[in-house]
Length: 101
Image (cartoon, rainbow, N blue to C red; front, top):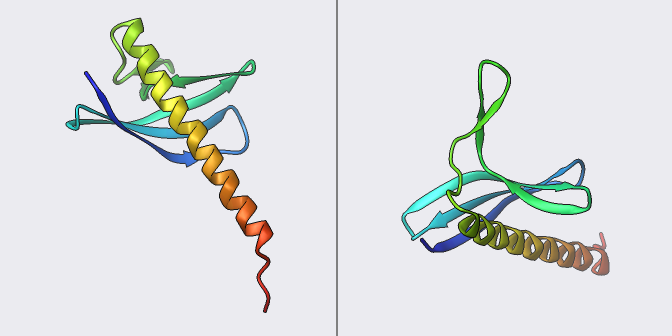
């Protein structure tokens, strides 16, 4: 299975959740709401889940093996880092070009 696209849908400045991503597999299946989480100075992904009646959470979709999980996490974190760089570059451009009225 090939990861054909990764989109960072939203970035967060505050709290442990840093981003929400969507991933396309084999140009045929999209998985939305993959979260990028920061804890103990480390970034990792959390798969989309649903809350059960007993207040626990159950993944709706998840990788079956460690190899694909590592590939998926690497692709999402690379897209997240790229989105951060682009957001930083945009913010820098906006501060360098003051608007005059």
